[in-house]
Length: 299
Image (cartoon, rainbow, N blue to C red; front, top):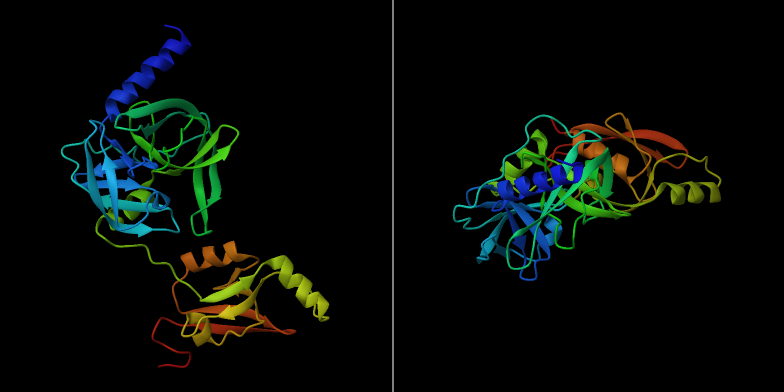
């Protein structure tokens, strides 16, 4: 058997294995989804337009599903829908995807059925911006071609096991998928229980690093990496801690802050209380960020 014939046989095998596990999302098939459990479909948050969505199965059956929960920053959502015996996809387990691994992109087609393509993992630990602009790290880059409407579909290995959730096209024949690791599985299970993702927020509007540098230089202050506070939400963690407009945030919980991504990463890893390092004018100081409902100095 030639290499092309072997690839063809592998594509046919994958198509057979996951034929009922990948569905269409939206009346116009704007995206795809993956059956992860009885009555449960995983997709990208950016495929949804409200609390209900049309789900189309491989046999052409369409029905209305209800959004159980959404993680917009992680570009994930789980839809509750009558899967009518559609096979839940098998997860790949603990083995992480490696550069050079053979993978297969699986997306839905209009009216039901799946489209399967072949490619290779070309890079790992890639980042991209989610629907809200937050950086999503750790993605798998691959070369399995994806047609429009494939986001939210499956990236699988030769056994039809889920290794990623296709999410983003980056051009020039490369695509990104969220890795189907233990962390993703835990998040999906929580979404399936109706637990929407909650992430810590300071409640500040910020200016990027280069703007902060230019403004500090213009008033004769020393240049310093950090993010400049341009606004503060009333009642937010930042307001309670005593952050002021014009402060330069330079650390959080001992982590250096140079840009918005650093701050988001720090907030994801920290639990209050923690110290927020700021520069106010020429003076550096620390502010205490407390748990919601508490203020600095509470016993």
